[in-house]
Length: 294
Image (tube, rainbow, N blue to C red; front, side, top):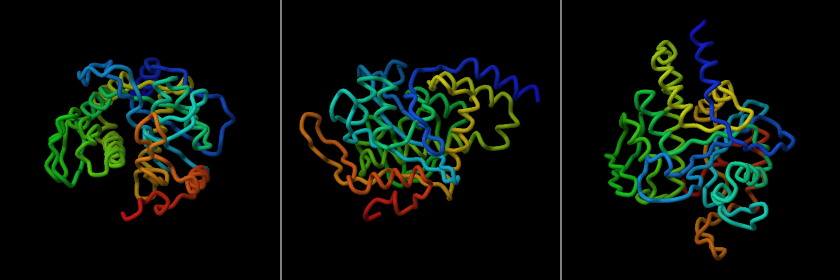
C-alpha cells in the first residue's frame, strides 16, 4: 500500500493551481470545466501565433442520479461575457483567463463549476506518450498541412504527436469544429481507457511516468487535488461508456454573423435552456445531443 499512497502525496504536492472558481452556490451534481489552451508558450506548435484562447471547452457533469455527460461547448458559441458584451465563448479566456471563462460558462449553462482543469497543446502529446500511445479511429484519409495530420482511413495506434494533430485538425474535416470536438473527446477517452487497464495499475514505472507528464501539463482550480483528478478520470470513463451522454447543445445557426466578430455558433434559444436543465437533472437522452440528419 505504500506505493500508491506515496505516489498520491508526491503528485498532490506538484499540482499547478490557478484561481478559477466563482464561489457561486453549488448546483446539483458535480461539474468539471475542461479547457484546452491553444497557447504556443510551450513551444509545441512553433507557428508564431501569440496570445492564447481556449481551443476546446467541455463540461463533464455527474448528475445526482448518476447520469454522466460530456458536453462540448463550441469555442465560437455566441455568448454574453460579463463586462464585455457579446462575443465568442473562447474570447472570455483571452480577455480574463480562467475566472472569466468559468463565469461565462456558468451564466450560459446555469451550472456552477465545481472544478476547472486546463491542458495546453504540449500536454496532449506528453500524456499520450506517457501511457504508451493511444488507439484512435477516423473513417477518411487526411493530409492536412496546418495540423500536420497525415491519416489513412481506419483505426491506428498512434504516438503523442499524432494524437495532438488528430485533436487539432479541422480544415479537412467536413464538419469543421463539430468534427474536431468529437475527435478531442475521442483522444481524451482513449487516454482514460489506457490508464484504466489493470496492467497500468500494476506497473509503478508507467504510473509515475503518466502522473509526472499529466501534472506538468495541467493547471487546476485552487481547490482541486490529485483525488479530484481521479474523480475526473472516473467520470470521463462513465460519460464515454454506452450508458453515458456525449455531444453538444442544440444549435440553430453554425454561421451566425452578429457583426464585428466574424462567424459564430448560435445556440437554439428555445431548446438550449431546456437542454442545460436536463443536463443538470441527469435526464438527457441520446436524442438531445443528436444533430439533425445524423
